[in-house]
Amino acid sequence: MSVEEGLQISILASGSTGNSLFIQSKKQKLLVDAGLSGKKITQLLNSIGEDPADLNGILVTHEHRDHIHGVGVLARKYHLDVYANEKTWEAMSPLIGKVDNAQKQIFALGKTMTIGDIDIESFGVSHDAVAPQFYRFHKDGRSFVMLTDTGYCSDYVRGLIKNADAYLVESNHDIEMLRMGPYPWNLKQRILGDKGHLSNDDGALVMTDVLGARTKRIYLGHLSKENNVKEIAHLTMENVLKEHDLGVGYDFQVYDTDPDAASTLFAI
Ligand SMILES: [Zn+2]
Ligand SMILES: [Zn+2]
Image 1 (cartoon, rainbow, N blue to C red):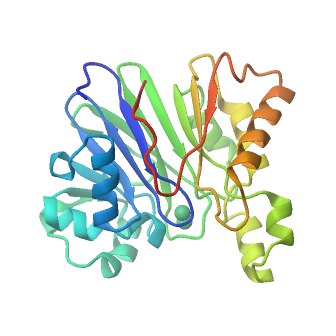
Image 2 (cartoon, rainbow, N blue to C red):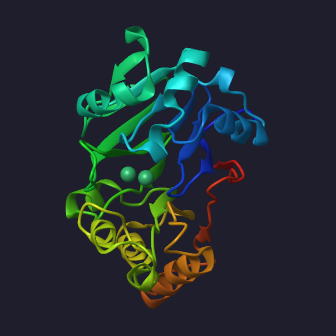
């Protein structure tokens, strides 16, 4: 599908088993993270009618395996530029195999970069990686925000991500399911801590604070396989938004994502 204005996005995969997102403008086709095998990401791209050979680059959020597993393979095979901040580069270099220096791009934390015709703002999050950063994409007055892998959302980040056209927001776990579930105590503490992941409730409360008149779509991302189910994540988001008198279902819609199926390409 060609794009004349704005951005088109598909969440190729989202969840604790692997994350990747496709975003395109008139002139650029980018991935954010490639946390599944190169083969699987190729299949996911093909499922939305895209070819990895047409990609221009991969932005990396942080060095956890569920975000970088396929980065090296795809970068080598298709000669893609890879963007990450300096500390993340240091941490992920030994994990992704050889990437040509010419393909290594620095995307400094907290800075804005223009890649082709897309302006991209990076912002730091609170997560147990060396320097995790997420992104807000701007094109033709429209914008898209990604916010997952964060234990909490600071006022500073809330200020940066207000009133986007669409969001991918973390709904990692249901707090009760996590507490009652099979994880060992220290792992539960890690997930619940300030450097872990946003729960269904936390993600929903962030949205009540940041969504605005432009907002049309909220995608629930990075669901835990063990400590969440889609229906609970979805209901929690909708209920919290309703409790805050926000127009869920008419002003904007809430969408699920899948760990191994691409969402339909949508335009903003
Ligand atoms: Zn993750
Ligand atoms: Zn992570």
